[in-house]
Image (cartoon, rainbow, N blue to C red; front, top):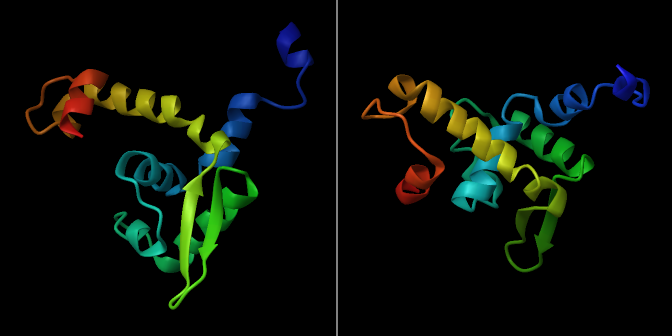
Length: 124
């Protein structure tokens, strides 16, 4: 209880306010695990539409998770890059993945068998 008295709000809840909106985690996943950096690449995320993607990218910029880089030329190319703050979430994403492949392997793994992070790295 003494720890909570030192806080203005629950840090877990605040983290979910930053990353908990639909598609935010999947955008970060695509950036960190698949190397995506362009708007059209993120449209591959199942169920996302351009308007929602644009909103999430702006929110992620505002929260310091990503930065927007404009590359001049014809045509102008815009890239989205993960910041140091965003990269700090990689262990969290890895643990979320690990939780599913270990505890829900029948639902998420083709062979139905639990996996380790090392197993996942070999697949990736």
